[in-house]
Length: 427
Ligand code: EPZ
Image (cartoon, rainbow, N blue to C red; front, side, top):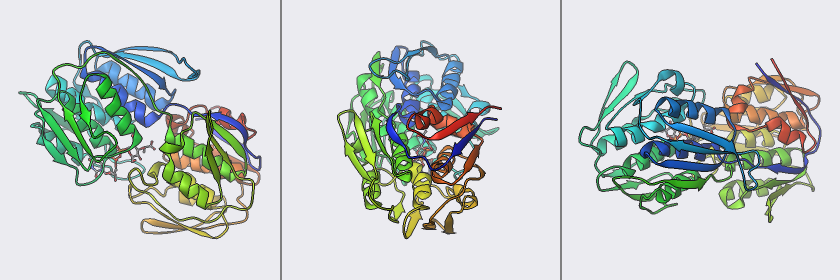
């Protein structure tokens, strides 16, 4: 298993290119199941999760073409996906257990083929993560769903019908699933208390490009007009706001000065405000986002994760790593997932002072961290340990790098390009 070795204490200076968004790409790829026409996606990142999704789509019968990216997306991929015929309506356990986002095929397969069999994903390192909202929404659209042998077995013999559905809790995945189901349902679907993440907006815009009328894009009420057929479309994925925020925090951690090429301030407004309170400067440039911290120590800053436009749960671990070195204390509260503090004991092994009390972690800044062997059980927790390693004295080895490879493209290359002493150890 690969590991990442970091020798801490180097400032990050220079440029880092931000990749296309993983969490936008995954539902956009699933949208290809809605039509027999071609869907072309530019700026797709090269990540393990994208490969897993391609594997899943391939076994549903999607023809896949991949070419190197163009238009400044030199490291990205342009994918062409065409689901001329759906050869299987089953999403098998072996793929779904590797990546929960596989569940997103449920709505699209059911809408197009009127039947779908999708493995239940089970719990994962960051919480129980049920799929009850996906099920309730599809039932409101007329589906019959049973659980059999660990699989969701969904049927809608007469096709799905447009419906009004209010999410009792904001869910990114369930909103995406129902948007895709609604695209091929009969009539109009109104989704209230829908998630508003930029990745949802990306999916809505792609559906519009595919010929599906969607109103209320970017708001908590989405109105989707079902169509008989979707058309061929080409779409370019937004830059990854979580990768942007992660590198902004890495730069802040080392008191460096880096331009995040392609980074967009408007996608991380709340994060930018939080970082400014902590003493970090962020400014939009023509080419991206400049992040620097040149004067003074980091200041302890409180954070509470919330659905967009709040502070994202996917940046909580990285922010905590940053706050371990701040002056004063920070209260970090996680409201989205119930067990997303797995990085805390590992940060403690590096000398961090963090106390967990229910859904909050009190971080008292320390003057120094010390390198150690660490590992984590999800990708954001793993990258938070790499951020801590950048500022720690001596050597840090982050084990189980396959978590990082799910969501960070060429992490060690990007950081080394700005002066970090970091390398991947094979084996
Ligand atoms: C998406 O997961 C992201 N994944 C996650 O990123 C992200 O952390 C999460 O949204 C929140 O922003 C992708 O986009 C592929 P949710 P998702 O449904 O859709 C509960 C990363 O690191 N819930 O918005 O699975 C759920 O348990 C990943 O890149 C239900 O109760 O998240 C959680 O507490 C990790 N019932 C909350 O809602 C349901 O049916 C939000 O989950 C669905 C969700």
